[in-house]
Length: 320
Ligand SMILES: [Zn+2]
Image 1 (spheres, rainbow, N blue to C red):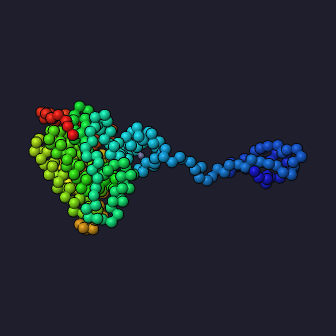
Image 2: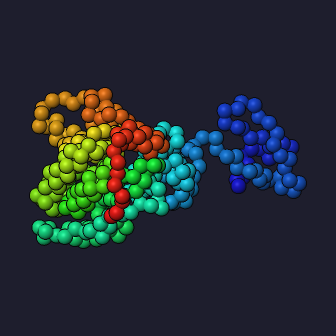
């Protein structure tokens, strides 16, 4: 509310509207109130938009296109932005449920947990915090399940558990999964997301690279397929071992995939690096990756590949 700045001896008060030249009558002054005329304060036409109050936990902002997405819609689209197609991270269980029938997935080694072999300061408390945060014992879920009509041995990593790092537990669980696949003549599918080997376990982490690849070599000798699914990001010790030795290597769109980070490579090679050289699109163009598959098509594409790769292979009965 404000006093009118206009003169008080006229019948009509006038107000100017910013940007509009003409003046027009507004209200008749109240009788007996000739000295003071109350006018509604015009809303300023300039200034920023009113701040939207958004309840926390209901909306997610897309980092690529800035669209605000209702969480339930995002969930219904398997965590893919419906405006720009940005693929948000999935938890390991979300990924498992997106690929296999939830009813018959038999998890393997679910209680296997890390020990502090090197007595690394703070390692056990870090593991404890990650277990509490994710509800997982370590950064991978393994088990046997059915993808449409195919029995598969499935491993799925979770980046939210200590950056998906591969220590002894991740390496051992994947190795046991691959060996079970070999024993039962099942195809192996591993969905990777990882920052690399887990430095808290030093050399024991690095040994997992050779161990997982050794198990895959025996699996391959039986004529059984391994499909590696790369998701954002898959880097370092994981990309340099089992993730890059698939009979088929597929990736989600715009996933970051590589070994060392770009700055380290640039400092080492003293060379300018091509733009986007660590993306799934670049690596598909250059032959490392066989196909880029949007998340909504992943299950049907894997099923289609298995139709071809498993023709003539008879799987044995399933027992964990
Ligand atoms: Zn978006």
